[in-house]
Image 1 (cartoon, rainbow, N blue to C red):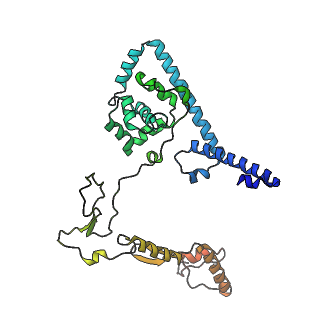
Image 2 (cartoon, rainbow, N blue to C red):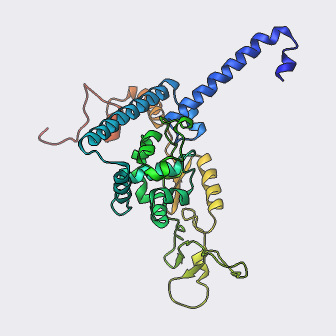
Image 3 (cartoon, rainbow, N blue to C red):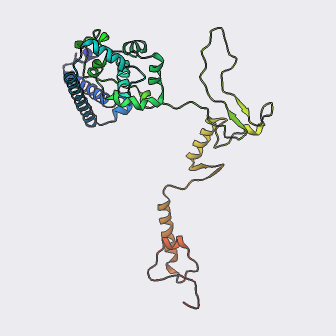
Length: 334
């Protein structure tokens, strides 16, 4: 396409402008990705580039400060407690026991697992390097209650920090010249927004209930189940199907046919009707204030020739305030 457009010399400037624009868009998308890796591409495109750039700068400053603090602590400890490589290997293997690890130390293992140039999401290799049981590590990365405990640490961690925590016997397999030691890792979306347990919705009827959705167990290829769907059964304990009145669709229920209930709801909303509990009522207009003012002006015009008002309530007085005349019941004391 480019070669075809450059056949005409007048298109050269336009082609260069489009190439420059493409490069700028690519760089902007990369900056937004670094600032907000948890968002989708469509959501990141609407974020201002300056805001994304400021967040990236803040993340880089935090990583540099964290690296400086960790390196200072390591140098201080090395001067106070000098040990050889054998002692370091023995102490590290003892400290990395999964029963005594803090969540900050566990985050190093998870960072190694998520980084494409280190563990590359290979749980077997990660567990072998750090000496962690496979079942224990699986709980760290699969249980939703554990995500908030290690995500903040992994988010601001770098490759340099992880390389310093790798046991000595495995550290030689990594070539630091081929790794970007200042790079981080992108945390997948499922670890930031964990889903809840899957349940079937209620049937909107006291005589019906639904079974809980459970995971289908692994089975041999020769075993075939007749049915794996969710069953509906009665709560009254009587054998046989429940009464036909239990299956009558209600407008607010949607337990029998959600698609039909949604279609009816949309049609009524399009006609300015709203659905309430067990009834359909007329919807209040959104411009009710303007309608009230127009109506009040008409009433004022009609009442210009009136000298005595027979009745007046609170709403009437609110729309027609009087400063000179007051309407009140006639009594002997007044």
